[in-house]
Length: 114
Image (cartoon, rainbow, N blue to C red):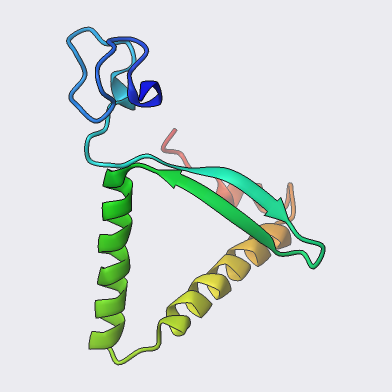
C-alpha cells in the first residue's frame, strides 16, 4: 500500500530509513498506523467513529487491552473504575485550564530553564 511507503526513500515506514532519508523521523517500526476513518455525529450529542489500522497496530491494541484486563483482574477492580478515573482526570485538567487567570502570577509560573 502506497500510504505506508516513505515519500523520500520509498522504503516501508515500518522499516529502518534508507541512508540520507529526509523523512527518517516518520519511520517507526515499533508503532502501528491508526487513524480515524469517519466520524458520524448524532442528534443526541454522541458520535460513531470508524478507525483504520494496520495489523501491527491491531496487535498492539489487543496486547494493551489484554494487559488492562489482567491488571484489573489482579487488583480485583472493575474496568469501569479505570475509565471513570480517566474521565475524572480529563475533567480535572480541563477545570485547571479554565481557572487560569491570564496575567495573574505569571512570574511564579515562568521557568528560568529556557
